[in-house]
Image (cartoon, rainbow, N blue to C red; front, side, top):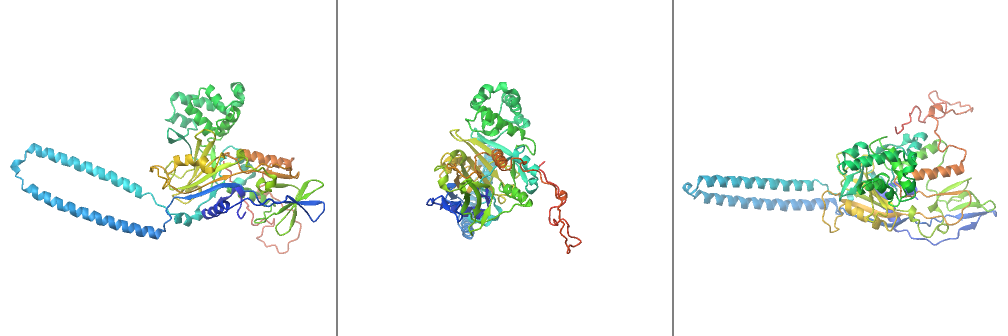
Length: 576
């Protein structure tokens, strides 16, 4: 790749367009032989032909006007001139009619008019005049409202390409999740800034509604009756310490979560909130899975804000870069834009002992961690693993799906029409440093069932207006300016690999990082069983460099530890 991060990459708008074009044109290559003989007779080379396609069903659509701005302004000026000429003709005609009407009225004798009838006529005329003024005012307000909505061209988006930071695989951090604890412990948090998700929404009663999470939100919600509020609060309090009351759920432990909620007398509305918006699990999740997920959600409430989620400013791709900085401080070396056409495998031990670069350099290794998509396709399953594959869509819109006065990060969680899978929408505004001011990025994600457009198209139609689709336009919905659909897929390793090659798969349909951190720790334990998992680094002032080499040219103002440019006296900017 010519970009960082692999499946975790984030792009500016122009780079995303290039990525889309590249993946639209990818075709399966001819499969090559897996192994070839190395120069050393006891070793063989495992080829890495990069023949695995991980992005499928790529679709890109542009709904904003592609007419050049100068042409649009010229056409608009012509339309305005024609409109002004028409208004002038109407005023002149009306003025002539008023003069004619006035001359007729002067011919009437005052004795022919009854005083009472005259008063009644005057009252009726005044009433009509007021109604007409109100009608004109309403029409004028509608025109102003429509004209106040800025029109964007495709060139506008391209001109602002630097202000976009669009993630391929967006995720959120639980405020009391394992990744937040790891960021604080490792002091990587000093390299990243976060914004708290401000609202969690769902789709009920044909509209977007805010999910009540905290106690105050539950009791102030107009969506629930007083009885439902009491039942919900009692259940949420139970979820926080469900391990201490095993007798209450033991009979339902491996049964569907919905069955257990029925036994707890939760209404269908309450079940919708608990399953899809608090636990955020599939409808067929077991009771123990649902309770554990609900507990993680509830424990994260109130730590940094009113919701349990954090979003990194500039996007999720900032997290790998932050950990790379920590690694570099302790001697980690990164080789960028370097192809690795083959691995060197020792035949006697069946272990990978090194890699070969594109210029023939051999680099030894004791262990190799590799994304499974970099392996030859001959070692992988023929079909994607749908459980670990996702459908994605990215939309650029002109307004928020739930407008407020402030820039916010909004999470929407809603089941698919057949309740077979859960769809999550994440809306990012300019306050999150991910798009220009006045525009919004909406990410849709769900587990892969078919093509991305088929999986996510129904929800997109509920949320947005699409220009030229023949449907009646809803002024309350955002207008889609540009969008793309694609599937990110993963494959199972079906062949046995050398013993010290460890594979990772960065793709999953979960909204948070809990499962990924658990997988990373397991890999770490295999390689370093007696070491702490990413231990806390020492503060710069506590680092002592044992350097006995004389330095004759040491300046007075130069730091004798050799860390003159290091971050000294910088306090860890923890999340708390």
